[in-house]
Length: 512
Image (tube, rainbow, N blue to C red):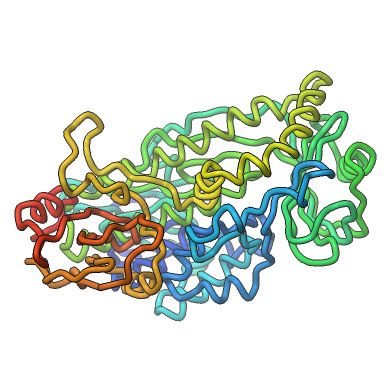
């Protein structure tokens, strides 16, 4: 299209263009809107997804929903999965996920809240906050003008009324595994596709599975993981297909004959191959990738949608801080440095796991059955130890740690506390100030005089001592808007070291 015609197109100017209105894109749009940053969210779909797709909402995502005032709506519409049962004879009914996480998060267990429900919730909250999604708008072209006079991006969208031009300071590609944004940036999507085929079905009246629990079943030829969707056997089955070109009837017959699982009604059926891929970069100029646009992996662990929502939460708050001149623009490098390693580790774990369990041969099936039998009895004992709490934290995604200092560099005083780099542990009342989405300082079991801080850093907020000892008395904690502990400084006679504080603020590239 020539320059004259481009100039004649209707133009929208905004700070951030989000391409994709799945859970990741909607979360980014909502957080930006709540922070007062103009944003345009566009998607080629006609509206929120109707299919269930992703199911599990983990504890860390529930904490983010709570920060946004949406947790109660999730809980009222979700079906809890509180346990994990391996095989049919697991002692005590299997492993209690809720027990593994009790005390470490306000939301122990897993909430089964379908992707479609997440999208309805987020799109409704986004509209209530004043931002409407541009549905039926497909990305046609994306130009990154970083370093030019415009210093941002120009996108061409094809909508119901024709072509629309959007000019933005930044663009977030949240448009899924087949991301048009990623293709426009020419960023490789490296990884593998499993040889084996899996099938997924939403079923009614399933018999042979526990209520309110996820379950793993292992047969002579295949295996399946079950997610509870509701009472009376409303279940999602994800299973290894005995052959690639499998149909619904054959798949469900295999579940009956090999796994002993019967059902009354089929709501949905599909087959697929698992992809394990990560984009080689999560940022290029003024454009960022989030969610499935940056990483895809097996859905069996219930981590994918949660990882995307947390990508969006992290990135949107970072962009808001730079836009509102609270952080230096160089801080934008933080997003890839923090979130890409999370995706890489998740893909590595699922790739290795499915490289083994996804093989279709008698030897692997025999090993699966033997390992599952041992695991069914060993797991409850092993996970009752401190190791179990660590597993619960990684499953719930609230043990993800960000590194704020160079790997081999000396550790500064402000980073020596073990809480630094982790999300803020729950102490009575300390979730409330997080809802402002602001930088803040906290104390636990002590008082401190407010140091010389920018006016937009709130606090000090004082809380009771942490009975679990995760947050120390006699220290001032600097908390990021996403709830991560950015720094910890010793308090001496009610004051912290001015030099130590400046060092911490400079390390996080805050404008002071």
